[in-house]
Amino acid sequence: PKGFHLHVFNSAYFALSAGNYEEALRQYEAIPEETEVDINGLQRYLHEIYERKKESAFLFAEGYTVYRWKNKEDGISILREFVENGGPQMLVTKAKDLIGTV
Image 1 (cartoon, one colour):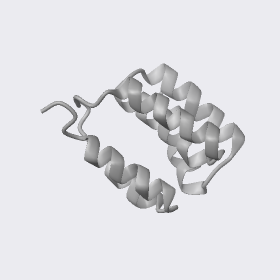
Image 2 (tube, one colour; image 1 turned 90 degrees about the vertical axis):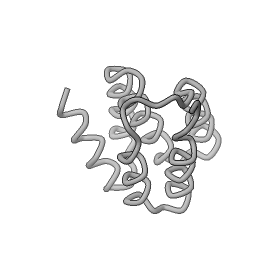
Image 3 (cartoon, rainbow, N blue to C red; image 1 turned 135 degrees about the vertical axis):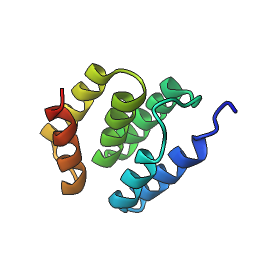
Image 4 (tube, rainbow, N blue to C red; image 1 turned 60 degrees about the vertical axis):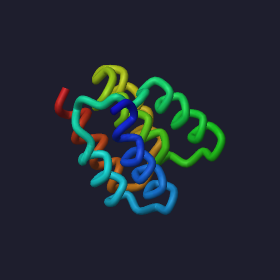
């Protein structure tokens, strides 16, 4: 069904908001590569949250989402920005791992 995995993306969002990065990553990794969720809309939303709150975890979320479900090169670009700006160590490590695979 369309948007079937949206609740998992929402769970990841709330985990990020609470600073529970391990849980957020677990939620993201549970989502298959093929999903009917509107990734463009999700990307815009995550970017808006990052711009408004200036919480780096949401820049990571934007980059990770783009990397996994839209375009690896664009995702890497966002993840590089996240790493350069700094953020929670667990997320920086994950971003560096992804950047290193390309």
